Image (cartoon, rainbow, N blue to C red; front, side, top):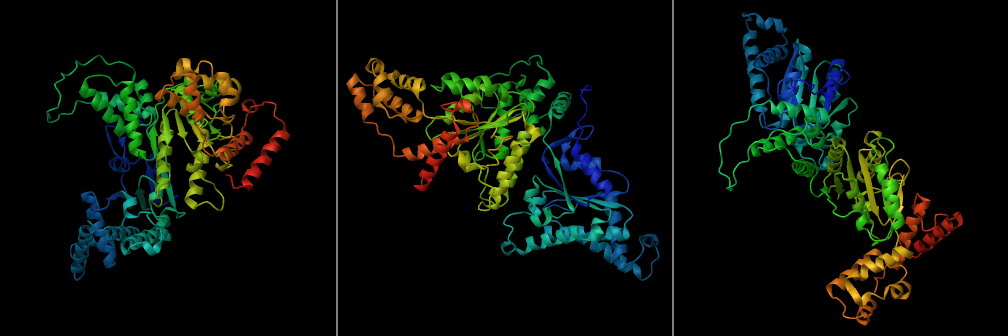
Length: 605
């Protein structure tokens, strides 16, 4: 334990610098605000941690949260009561120490009782509580020797973004927003020495009239890094086991004998990347109860559960592909490129790594299957991004901020996005403001040097042209745009052999016939898979029966759409070696563009 340094919280140092310098008097503290933090002796929630760290002479700490009281230390409450009485009566605070005040005594007692009444009325009345806190900051400037440091917990519940249309807000919401806006915009306040810190998970959750004030600065508490997790593991091991009331378990399995501790703290800290201290604590408690060391499966399960809890199952899911590139039929040239060029660069830890790749090609071409195999080869956590957009106002920004915190905490992760053109929109004038903002943030994250070598983006789309040009540029997934096309030549024959395998002797002599005339030239990987499934379900008894079964199969009327998607994949490809003809000329590329224009003129998109 002694060899591991205590965590150094840069976010707190930043917060202290802002307060001490007077750079801002209104601060939004966001990010990993629901976690545990080390105060020098133990781990505790954020607000007690902040109170411990800011407990200095000359500073009165005030804490308020929705439906709770305005919390003060006893001696600080007495000081504020006297300052309030002096301010309201117009007397110098030193005069209140004089016992004989004549006719002013009753006025002072009245103001003291008024202060106590405000404290009581603030419970359950958020609007009155905020106005009382604002009045306290005015009182502090006039009649208090000390400075105020006010922490407002769950500020997003007090001042929610919600539907930010003024006409749709109720009177209480309007008044609270007006109170805080006036408070933070008061020149005497922001040039004074009192500070208000709004605590929320995301700045986007606070109403924009407050969050976007130029005098309001933000500080973000990041997820714990490897060193912080290592310190917690070591600290936790040194703590006595917690006593608990035994509850009968629905099991007759006896407890395992406690094994000797194995592994290193650093290894456990690295493997739990992505977990908060709270989640890591749960993992260690379960391990201690079961009398066995934390296993890799335990860690993976806890990380997956925690991340899905944070982001929501409708936003992400963990993918565990069981197939590898060896299971991919055909695509010999592509598989060679992936194994020899792409995978080694994705595994690099620094700016030599690829930020990811966009995979284009017609529907049914096998894009998802092939690149699930790529993800399996990488042996990294694979997050499937399902839908980052929310129907609720402002919630999309919150989801994105959570996603970014998760990605920054993980050591290495693959982001797998199927149908990427529907996930990420454009940034042009026709796009909705939320869509433009989301796409801009995703673009920034793809090219963020801090995430290079840590986050790998694999975007699958049959409509590569609908992805934002900014996403397709070099430095983002535009570094590598890979076409996955219908099989031709030996790749096509490999698919036919794979399709015929369940047919046994009935298909032994049909390879050449199917290749040359039995199947259309643009037969897709999905088509081969459909025929193979049919053959497995109803095994043909003879070659004639197999021919009849295949002849009965008609491709859907999507040929022109697939041709359009194929052409878009070809013109957007960023590697000549991945094109059907590596020596393709500019004249041929111009012909592709011309054919695209002709198809678009027919309404094909």
